[in-house]
Image (cartoon, rainbow, N blue to C red; front, side, top):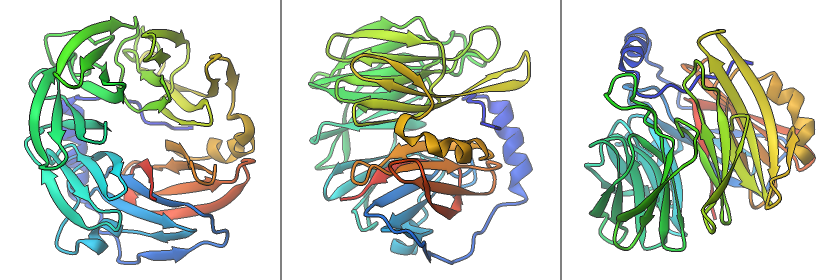
Length: 371
């Protein structure tokens, strides 16, 4: 299985990639609606990141087994979503926020896809969290900070410096928990980060930094109640990938000796597909685990969804995992070659394959359930 190594901020690699792809920008066709034989009750958005510097992020809609590609563009014919979609979040029943990293904006849309506003001037924005009144967004800019946005005005009302290159963020009982990466360490004068910043959401003051002992807390971060599942990439050389389950109530944590590169939560468990790349060996180590809460008991595989494992293992590049809170169906995306249209696979509660959706979007990574 070939899973992309997570190296962030390596400008030289990004420039080379952009040069390679500049002459072959994909213009997908206008086919938008495809029905699938086994319909479910789910209505999901799939955010495809696109390619850095190519302004080709897209959103697809899966609605009761009917796939609509280029859904955002269909609802907003004169507008592109932007460059490198990085996260999306249901703020409330009438508002969705989308972090568009390289366009330096947060795009707001209604559940029907209509674009209504944007927050600008959050350069290199990453992940989102909300308490219902405010939206919080991490940014790599200015040595790393969190922006606080008033959802009524869509304006930035405060910021808080945190660690270098912050990634995942969660809001819990008036506090924000931010995973710091230090991912630009190969170009900057700082090392990888290993801390979680704790912020008072009202005052936007950093209360403390909790050292996990695990470096480069990069990528997806799932929340299940008071627990967070955080991926630690390592340094791709001597320091291997790890995973952290962090209790936001007690501020205690447990470290596991496997990565959780793509993870999600459902029914009191974390489900994770992990990949560990080493420059020393030039190989990937692949793992799949389920973590039971609050016991922290770990099982190899996907538990009740284990029947999906043969299909997942034959994917070229698994890139996202999600379990629908409505149906309990498991969704796993395959980004294939990272520069071509991806797939989303839908599995039933017992792990049996229901549908394979062929997207008109590159690097499908993020899922969101619609009401």
